[in-house]
Length: 234
Image (cartoon, rainbow, N blue to C red; front, side):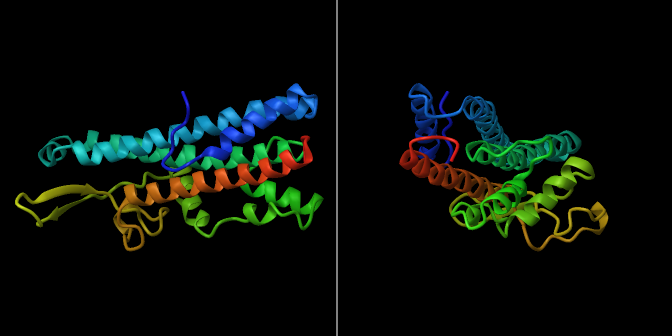
């Protein structure tokens, strides 16, 4: 089933088709072709999984009756944290797998420990000044995102407090369940402060779009260069 994100992801399909064409014409190395078809599907899987968890989270927060939350608080908190955990885990993994795709298409040797920043470090060492390096510099938003993701993976849950927002506009006031993210995810739940990111669903939506955009842009840059050179690795 084609991956349908929230914005155009056309560069993904274009690069996949080009890799196939280059392989048919004998213009791609066997190792590059093999590794691309190893890591690219894994990247799409992680992006689809992140999207699934994000949409499940939104649905849970909008479809659950307020009275039901009061009766089943423990189960409700479990499900919300499960979807938040799934979103952050898969989104972070997608960035790390994206690094493997990049290194594969540049013909770099792959090792066991490769993370998003590894691609920038390795290319900067072997190809200083390469145009793609500017795409691989850690985005300013990634530090906070990674702190949330790492805390969820290794230490604490994030969603420990929820709010009921009431919108009085209109004939029938609407209510919404909102989970804020703690400013310091490592703080104990009773000591947390919530100022910077008051709505986890909105935070996750913005960052998922950023990850998709970054992946699409990198795929597009590589596609243009590979099409021009007529061969892979670059």
